[in-house]
Image 1 (cartoon, rainbow, N blue to C red):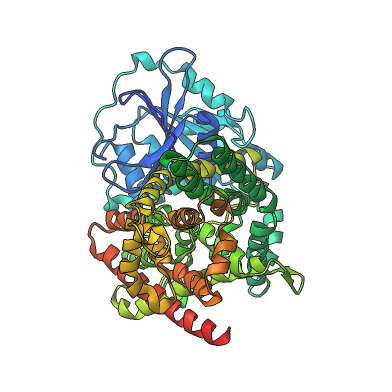
Image 2: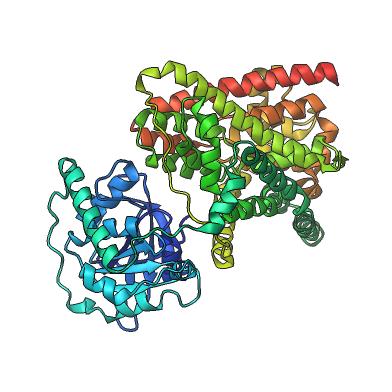
Length: 631
């Protein structure tokens, strides 16, 4: 999720959702706010916050804040610390909530009610929501909300956040509050101290045990279906095979399913370019439209279907509860390189974009493990690399099958696995360089019950990802496409000049200046220009190549037929070397900025930039030499 613009009253009434991880809090937030939400960072911190608007029957809408999941008010990681600081009114630039909605997993009251008791001591108006009430009922748990309310001294309602109308009781409570006459909450005290942690937790545990015993809910009710599935999915031998098979199917689908929508987008772009050429008189502004905008933006937009297919599977696995199992399976492998399974989720997030992946490392309590995870996160293949991979694979790998498997899909999977292997190798080296800060701890993490994904959440997640991509196409890539067209078109070639006119342009001059550095890798000056502009955003490299080769071709066709153009002008060794470069190449500038914001200095971004450049150059050099000999 990334920001949709939303204008909220800065001093409006603020309701915060608080709860344990995996309690359905975010699903409830999505249900309450719908599309009226935005995502940003807390002031002074890189921890993500989700804020939305809930319209009221009368008066101004309520501001709804989805806090990071916490297990207690004694924080051990950055995300828990920020959530607690917001609740206690200690975070600069953030107002303390006027009321709280404490979301509890109805199938795990023992854990959730301990947090409820801690939140109750804050003295804020609070509603306890027993979410996943349908799952609890299916397991035979008979929870009496009124009896639980009397025991806690707080209002209690039930909800099923994934169902339409599942938030009705919460809306009713919020609508009934006399917000207009509510007086401001007094400033919070310093909050609970870590020295009190053990005593408070023990006391709360005893109180929760007493409440559950009186309500007849003190016996554990296992999730039989999830336990049966886990016997297979978490098996020491079958589990990794299943995980690899899932990844294989995902990347096969990325190519196989995207053919029709990609052809449709290509056809639309070609039709627009041809119509512009036929309808508009020759001139610089027609060249700008056809060779700049349509070539640059169309060359990137065509890869949207593949990105959405990839994210569909990621969201599907996340919604079903499989991803924590994957982290558990990979804990032993990651332990061999000095990390734990806790690094898996941030690294997985980096397959979408390294920036949220780097931000997700805030959940790693050990600082040394967090820095190492940040350093290797950019090696995970982000969605911005996918257009580059797809273009080069389409140009140099046949579209046939091997042993009944889609050959291009196999190559794509190999590229992703190579990036993962490179990250693990770097982590293994860092294990020996940073042994003093390493702490060996067993992995303890919650495995939520399996459940069917909701199409509403899947659709919302895909729409948000599509919007992020389209906005990048309409802003960063648009501006850089115009800039590249200008650099590739001016100054005009002097009279009597030999060779294509673009070689005399500013882009040609820049490319030729850089070509000496990249010549040992088999890269020409056009690739040099693409690598330079690609530092702004990975997708821009495609737009740069499309713009440069469209200018050479002199029409709009080169924009969407870039793959055959590259296949005709580059050698196989050059194409493979460029693929190797992009596996390890430094991420976009926003990634380096995110690392700076997380670490508080430029030392870690500088290390990231230098080691990735060295890896990329070395991998491309070796690949070019080996393929040149083989081909």
